[in-house]
Length: 295
Length: 217
Image (cartoon, rainbow over all chains, first blue to last red; front, side, top):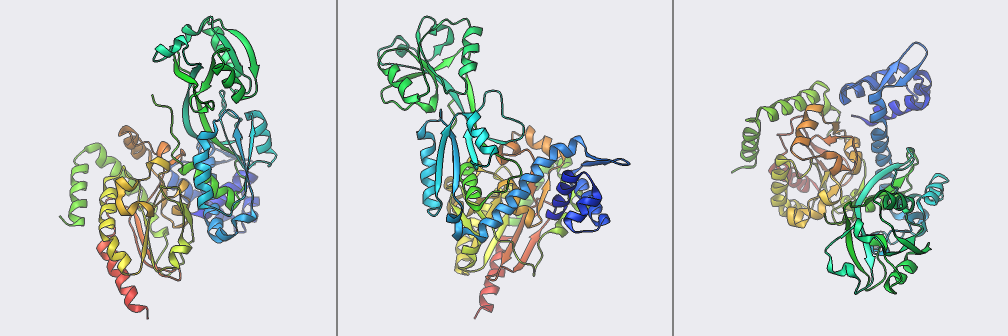
């Protein structure tokens, strides 16, 4: 597989026209066609279908396109980074982190990144996935670390980082403390503190109804620390992702029958070129040894 | 046993399984027909510079390594591959002599994150094992290809799901390849083979480096 073959193929994807693609790539049309045929042979399938007036991607072409884009984008990133390693500070980095991700999750990554790339100035934006998605689209964020129960808009590049189970949080001395795990049905009758910013908030409503669990909702709040402090004060229980507990002394048990999990992912815009700072951070995110909840 | 003898033994054991033999032939046949090895960087060409992370998440820049001396760049498929394992062991053994010749070594794999061999698995070599994310550098070196279906099925059957290891669904792998690059960034030795059971002998790499060292005033 060669770089120019991928470039030519992506140019045809953009234009759906061999003549225009060859102009953009500055090669003759037969050369462009040959290169794409070679790529098709190598990948083991037809990428494009050429009809009289129209060119379109085959199913296989649609499958391969994002992967080929990814390779090429990283190729650019790896070399751009190499050329301007010393100029990383020119490009600030805007990270989005979903507000329900506990700070302990990210601090190791951020500290290591800072140590390895002391020149990069990074700002951290906290928000709910819908906001972060908007900021990503508008280019105000370079990347976001977040989860979405029903998946993301198709237009994003989503790379799963870790899986995390939901636990029940309760104060010391609560009846749940004697259990190894708490069945959903066991939660019936408890006072409930709702984490409004939880990307699963609606999901929880449906979930509890579906499982016929009746809870008394006493307060709802956008703030994780408030909810957890209220739990500590004995005002109720809450459901929270395992790694998102921030209040010391809070007790938790895994929720079972059924279990609830979320998948936290690295989300970027496909096709948008990474600055060296962003490329460095994306690599650090992928390299970081994210720990998933124990099964 | 010798390095080559060990590789021969791994191959003889592996190919005694008809499924492995069929998948092996499919890969080698596919790459040979496409003339894939001929597309790779050749002696006399310039190495594209790169920056990639190691298992500790530290970014390693080829430019920085070249500033210290010649560089050995070797591509391997992953720690799931027995030929790669044996080759990494041999390279680790050869590391003191590579350093004595004033050179550095990096080993690139498309594996990411926790799949990179750590210091427990790869000893002194570990910091020099870099994650070639999405095979981007492999593409620039001309060694990247897509595993044919029969091989993808075989690996998935063994539990070696490259989609998970690579963090993408492309099933791209490098042909095993080793390059020696001099301080100016020019390739002085290249070993690329469509047959993944054949590897550059670290002994040969050391000899190339020693010859380079004797040429340098």
